[in-house]
Length: 219
Image (cartoon, rainbow, N blue to C red; front, side, top):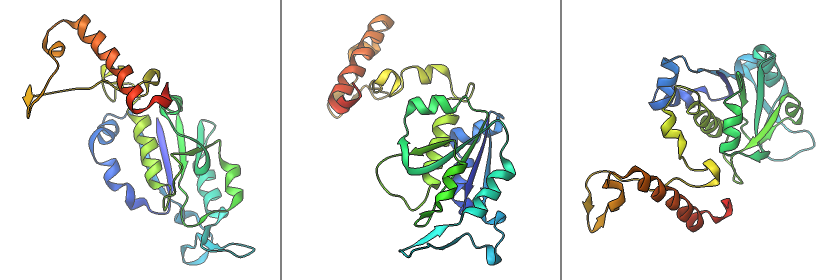
């Protein structure tokens, strides 16, 4: 898979590409991630990428021409262009599984007060990560990329994915490690019983219990 992220602030992604599972996925050549500076595609002086909006109003608006130039420079028939915007459908695990089957993702990060309305015509899909406002699309781009990359075959073990939160609309079961006793809190006996059938039944029932308690809306 190839992921191209269009941004005005490429340095925000330095740690994202060089740590943990994302770093290993890149090293194993499971994914290629390119951070593309939109400023490199502006035809205006002084690398201008934003301006005041027609009709008046507060804040600066991202100009359409630099974004069009950037997308058109990298877009191929295999590309799927995502625009991060409050207009988009809320992102979830089902969407992550859909996106992991794409060969090439182009993710456009907005910034400032918004972007020129014409930029919407570039998008194959609009995505929001929730009903709240951020200063830009860089953090959502990292979140979406991370959630997709970890699903790519060979990035992490298949058993790690099997009972994760949101699979089957249920949250994950509780997990424990050493010590077995800690400040009056004990690891459930079934988990150290060696009876894998009972352990599986326990975990399934706990997924349902936890989902009912914390995220009943998922049911």
